[in-house]
Image (cartoon, rainbow, N blue to C red; front, side, top):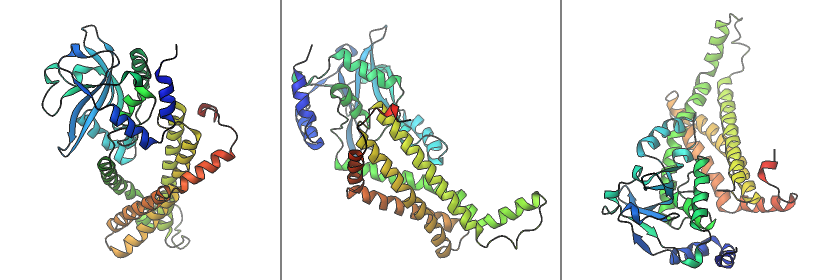
Length: 362
């Protein structure tokens, strides 16, 4: 049977993202305090107050999807413990493991694993239910719980502080909108600062093999030749082969990163969670394809300039490579800010044949 909210949501979906956020922020201000687990109902949109380093306040969002044998609520949310998130940084930064978006995952657990009943109203960390107006309830409680459990079953790990956080998960369960009402300018700034710091550290480590190849490439090749008992080839080797070797390593590294980004984007489109349309997928592909040469070029140029300006073996190349990489990254981002990738994605999408499901693209 068609719910009364269908017409309302058809209208809301036609609004711009900013207007959707403004409308929902106005409608979803009411809160009901949760004093015990018995106050929680199936399909409830729950929030818990918190703050980042005591400076940026926010609400952590989760949803009740059922109850265990003891009658305690089961919840689904984008979550990770501080210890596990820190441990995940090691393979993520080194580049041999998961990307930073995998620092959290959609999980189902007993609410007691997240917050004890005695701490539901701890000052500064109070738990409350978001009161949704009846006319905005797009799905019944059972359907909301089912949608949340489907995301948890897939062990989704596409966390993004701005685009796919704990709130966007719950908003999707309730409304099918990939939207976060608490993403403000301050949150975007925090995301950029933490992201830049993370990328700087990651790139510092990843530039080491490139710089070593550039700095000692000639010596490495000669040593390998001697081990293979090959005839001396020093005279036959072109000068500066190490520089070329470092450049090749940089290009292959960025090409592989672009491949991973495109593969991840295709999976997101296939799931219809973070990327819902072909145009959005095309834009992600364009962003990755454009970013790779800018990052590689910046990294290579930075290595060379760093070695000249900072006469310390390896260190000068690393510093230059990191700064060059970040410069190339920022340059590619400017193209996105000015709408170039959006423009190209729209025209390519219009030029291609009618859309078809992402799982048919192979």
